[in-house]
Length: 184
Length: 360
Image 1 (cartoon, rainbow over the protein chains, first blue to last red):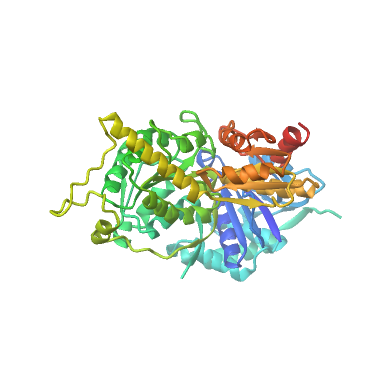
Image 2: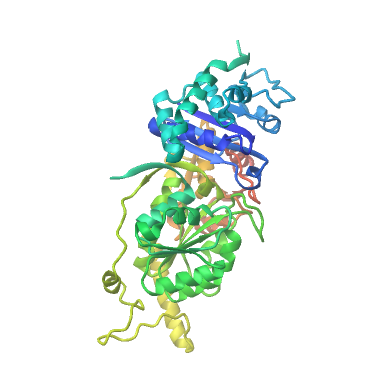
């Protein structure tokens, strides 16, 4: 099993930390992982993205031009990454703030109203965990027990009190993700 | 017991330097390697091992602090990125001339000038051919994973002290910024003053009545004495070539074509090998782990087997010159690379192989 994922959105949406929690969960599940962020000017208020690879085998290139799954959280990222999903792959997006919806018909497309859900939970910060939950519902690449360990490892100890909220957000995400277009 | 963590390359290098028993780090921040000093400071190394971490007023000051620390037999290091490395070159030449052991890490970014902050490999010439003035060489280690960033910190110290020579860890923005799983070695204790005096009798540890004064200098006003020193240095570099050449091969056993790449390019090239093999092209990869000494012999041997070689670098083509020297005209050697901080895709590498080597 090798899952090649791009997560892309605005800086501050928790794109990089979502990738980190996913990668750490992979480590806890004894997988090979890599986490390759965009860095520098892109992070400062502009777009941010991270490539996460989770695999049973040694990972060759941490930098990719085609992905099994693209998780897209703003319009710029939709413009940049919709075309880089492998045929038959998966695109997950939050329609909030999207003006041009994905148009490909050779991939599976899901939407998740994560920003709205996080707002209604009263915790906008867990937005990224709602998205992560949605992804894990479609692609359970790591087991829930490892996600818990991944949260423990990647969040600073002073934020460990937030882990139940994060896990609740992941569960919510699993419930609210819905298909927009499915192959076959 | 070994410890498993998910870390950035820069952080893994910093943690491994602490565990290698480093006595001091002197640096000046620059993207994409500022995490090294940030990490060291956050770790409060002065409490953990007694290691000193100091932000100097400039790169020039930092490398001269390294000169000072190394003169006293201490395990010292610095790190920077390309523009900062240019500033350090004078100091590195003096350190090489004075035969002092130290570790230097360069997270290469696109140049020339301030260039970009994105990953590049355009400092190959500077790293392997001297960089500063005078006939000298650094031992150059080229990590291609976060694990190697961790492994090469202690290795670099060992080689530096074995040969009394600066060792450069030539990383880049991608290796420094990405996170991978890393297994950390156990903490080595820092050496005591007594151990330093015993292990490095040349160091300026304070003159005692029963020995000559130790003088650390790179200055010889007598040209014949300087030439003797040059001959000695060259002998040392030949010994390093004999003993310390390191490389790795992937799928070269039956290869008709060969990629040669180091660092990030080697990771991309490994994927390119998979893509090419899926298309029925028998492609292999040789990854130099040391850039000086360069794996000339294994490349020359593979040139007897393959019909063409592509050197893949994130530069306009620098290592390709050493590949051509190794191959010595036996087979076609071409270069493929992107510049300015642009990373080529594995697909592009396969396309370049097809157009420049197979079809060319």
